[in-house]
Amino acid sequence: MLRACLTHMSLGAVLVALTTLACSSYANAQTATAGGAPNGTGLSPSLRVSNALSRIAFDDGTTVPALPHPEAIWPDPLGANTWLRNHGIAILLDNVDEFAGAITSPTKNLGLKQGSSFAGQYGLETDIDWERLAGLTGFSTHTVMVGRFGTPASRMFGDNLNPSQEIYGAGGNVVVHLVYAFGEETLLGGHVDMAAGLIPLLTDFSANPLYCNFMNNAFCGNPKASSDNTTHSSYPDASWAFRIRVRPVDQVYIQTGVYFNRKGIYGVQQMRTGFKLNGADLDGQTAPVEVGWEPIFGKHKLPGHYKLGGAVDTADHKDQYYDVDDAPWALSGLAPKMHHNSWSAWALADQMLWRHEGNGPDAGLTAIAVYYNNSPVTQTRERQYSLGLLDRGFWHSRALDAFGANFSYVQVSNKVARTQELQRALGMTTLLGGSFFPQTSGMIFEGMYQIHVWRGMTFQPDFQYFIRPGAQRGLKDAAMLGFKAHIELF
Image 1 (cartoon, rainbow, N blue to C red):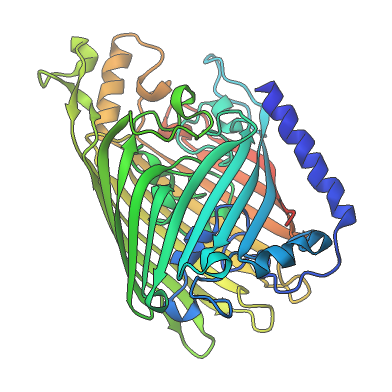
Image 2 (cartoon, rainbow, N blue to C red; image 1 turned 135 degrees about the horizontal axis):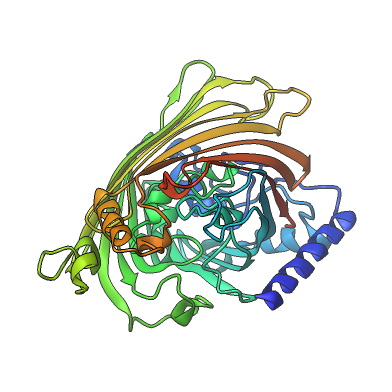
């Protein structure tokens, strides 16, 4: 842990130092947000889903959608990026740091504390247009590798549902962790898109590039309830998968696929580096389906995204309440009943309500809404509701700054609460899921102001307020202050 932390901080210092050497030009770079959060590694799949057919950009001379080209501090070091991109190769390198500290005292007599923590990630993304490089029509490949460290400060006051810093975890505390590696084929001018390889399910499904303008894991990278089921592989880990997306008309898409569940996902025993490529621990399949409508309204061309989706799987899941004899396992001591399936469903929307004319294509006030529903038999988070606003470019002189506020309500499965109540009656002090008290429902509010410091650099002061942390009525509400910083080197 210490070695990974020191390595990350050293690399972060190198990135900051290199800002003083940055080149002054950045021809052809996208805006700082490019339709989503400040660009970083791994964002491009959700950006692709969120662009209607007529808005998918293609470079001259190729049928592969344009490779990601975010605003960066050092966009073309020694002309190398221009040469690489002319040959169909895009390389991105960025750094994200997140800090949060509690400004309220925790619940007493539980061993909790008022503290702070720092979490971070550096990421390397490589995208290759093989049509431009080798004449393979419509074919491209995409890989991301990261290094991560840290832990969310919200754990210190007992929250175990809405981590204050989303960038923590599952990176194995190693210098290089493979996130994804897959090939993609684009056909019929973008009407059909297929991908196969190591792919996180949640980079394409129930995804939105706006979510990571926020820092709390309830919002970024997907609604937190989406990854409650580990068969829904989530960044920075992936599943062997095949995915197909069809756009029958300009503003509508339908996508589905099959994702093979990796039983050891997120664990350091098998997934520390992400380079475990065999199928020895495959345990069932997940089949998601999502339909999206991406309209543009009115003379001010206000974009919106509306998504309905669901997923079923055939993996093994423990019952949250019953044992193998259909009695409460908390009382019997027997193994929980095993279910060989589970399900989830979601409805997501974002809609620009007002455009700030003249401040860029992303400038405007956008509403964001989420509804997510999981099986209460096998999952902890039964439902999540979120509602937020994001306003970018409201100051003409600060066209790339943004203000955001988001609110989320999480309802825990009644089966989880009933098991925890039985455990508490038996005198247990640590309950199912590591909770101190039976879990019912909880809420989180986040407010932020995102400052565009320079090209490729943002700094974001952040406030979070937890109501019933971890959905536990016995825990005091908590408030946190912190920041999120992003540097796109190239």
